[in-house]
Amino acid sequence: MIAETIKATQGNEGARRATEIPWGGTGAAVIPDPEVPTKAARRRFTSEYKCRILKEADVCTDLGALLRREGLYASNLTTWRKQMNRGVLTALSPKKRGRKESSSNPLQIENEQLRKENNRLVRRLKRAELIIDIQKKAAQILGIPLSTPEEGEND
Image 1: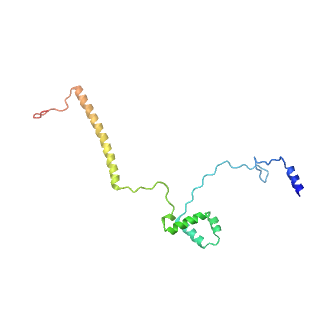
Image 2: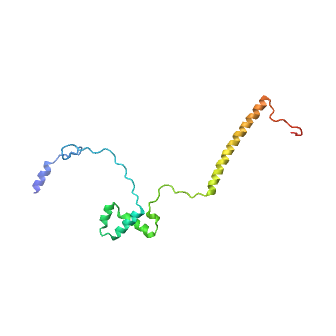
Image 3: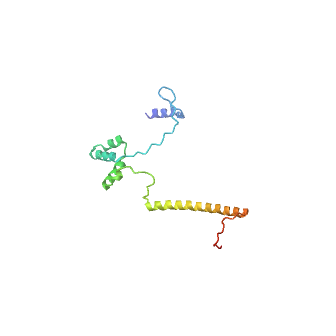
């Protein structure tokens, strides 16, 4: 028996297994798909689904079969039970991702609007003053009086 094992290993000595091209049962080469699979989307569970699964898990005799059927982990059940025991009803619903909405004060909104309007009016005033200065200089160069002094006024 040992001699047969030695002969079998000696006969295959130096032999290499072909790993470059896998062969199918029909004799044709099977070419692997070069496309990269897309990333799977993260699963989100509704509160109704979580409650239903927790109830099933409580009465289930084969918990492993339930988890395999639903594609869940035992840690999912543990987390959901903790959330349910805390009594946090919102914890059983999926949480909105991203930035939290800030509760804005209506006075703060009005203040921002007034600041923007003030800045806009300041820019218009500067532009109007610049135009008036140019008109004064043009009138001075051309020798046109801008205002006629009325009788009784002394400058």
